[in-house]
Length: 358
Image (cartoon, rainbow, N blue to C red; front, side, top):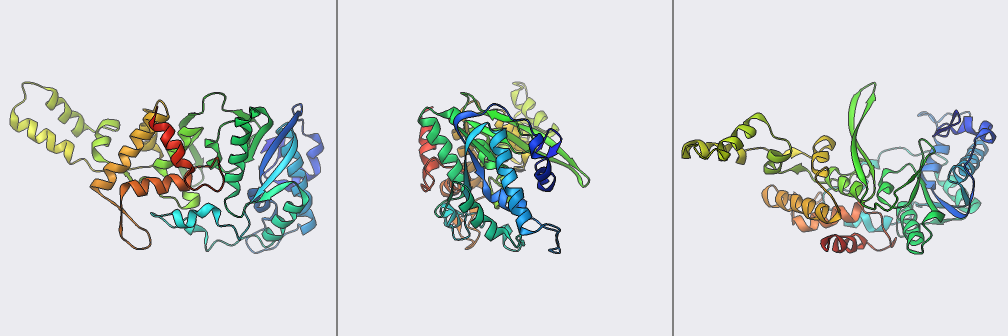
């Protein structure tokens, strides 16, 4: 986050210049809910060989400056830090995962040597919660939902780098820019396709806020947490959302009342033989652009899971056994949904019941 020329990502620089940051007027009673898992990682990060000019005391100081900067940028009177201790069951997500091992891509990644004690220190230094039976994300989302239900939407704001929390309504502090985003009255939200260019090339990404971002993740998954999403879009849907020359020609033949039976049969075969399309951001956005509300989102994406399950089939990552499409759909939703009740693994099912009535 760069504010007034200061880079929050570079906490060493921020520590010396925090007094120059200009903050919006404080809102009495507002609490900023801070993702302290990310903060602890950020302040304890060192070079790959473990060498660093920073002492542990420097890291503590940088953490304090970051917390106060986030408090100021959020126009908050209070802070509440959310942490996931190493002993947490992460809301049962390890047991809920069926298609891929939850966070199974993190096992071999080294962690900063001071990460554990930094988490402990942050939990003692500031008001906060160590979430033993859910993740810090769930803690932040449930706190925000609770404030909204109390009619205190303006008194709660989330500060996190984690994209998962973008699905939560209300106020959010953009960790990269320092800007406050308000979802307003549109809980369904929006999703857009953006391109990120790096030295290694250009990558398509989906960005957005609200429930529509949750549905985006139900399609493309979440690589950071090793969540599968929908492996592919069925071919018959690809014919509609991403037609190619052969399918356009085939559909034109079928619409031509003068076409012979032989031509029509060949055209139907062309449409039936269309291969499934990988469900990446560029394809997923074509589906998402058709969704107008939570009801159409639920019916459409549930239908895609059903079609894929019946045609190709889902497989359990550990046993290799078939997984019924309904269980696969529920599992992915339980993994991805940011909860209103932090320990309720079926929280997303309540949301889906609401969607089904739309």
